[in-house]
Length: 235
Image 1 (spheres, rainbow, N blue to C red):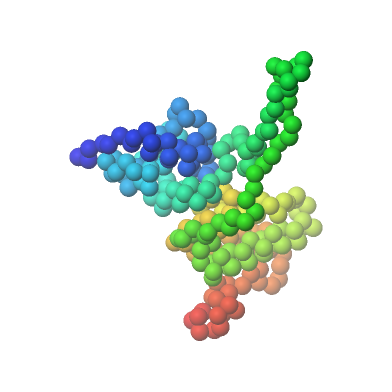
Image 2 (tube, rainbow, N blue to C red):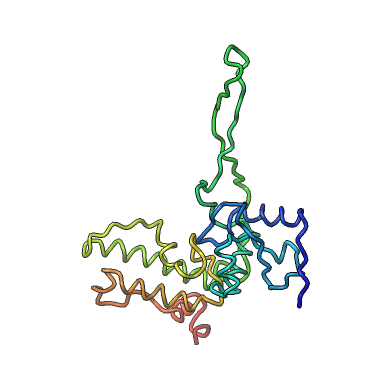
């Protein structure tokens, strides 16, 4: 039986900060330090290092232990946390504002004056693609981008049939549903790429325009490779 090794306060603090004090499950992101627990990714409770720990709420931790969430899901969440790409905690904006607070020195010396809200941005910083995700493979990334754009175009074209409102900004979330990412299809693990492609193609076919279109709704993965690299790559 593996001996449990309690993480040090330093390690626990580092993991919590890495996950922004919220559950690392992108579909959850509940913020409540009182009920959150540290999950050992490799299930070795003696391996209590930052690289093997993930902050989860009690509910998501129980589901992970019960294999409701797969090991690949957990590894994806960890990579997203390490890269700073998890969605913001529930109830917080994507960029938490930094308030410039000044104290008045006159008669209202005890009142605080909020002069302005500043959101710090590093315009020079460029995020490095996370290895193992769709975004890190040029062929997968470009085909995923093609399918997302095709879905947006078909949804817009279909409005003359079904009159349904559609926001292009929701396309990534709709197409990434069920694959561990709520913000972008590019953050789906590469080993689930073809599973995701099948679902994305199905959703394109099921749009109002897709069902009324007499021509094909998209080109295939093999055709995509042929267009990018020539016919030999697709064979």
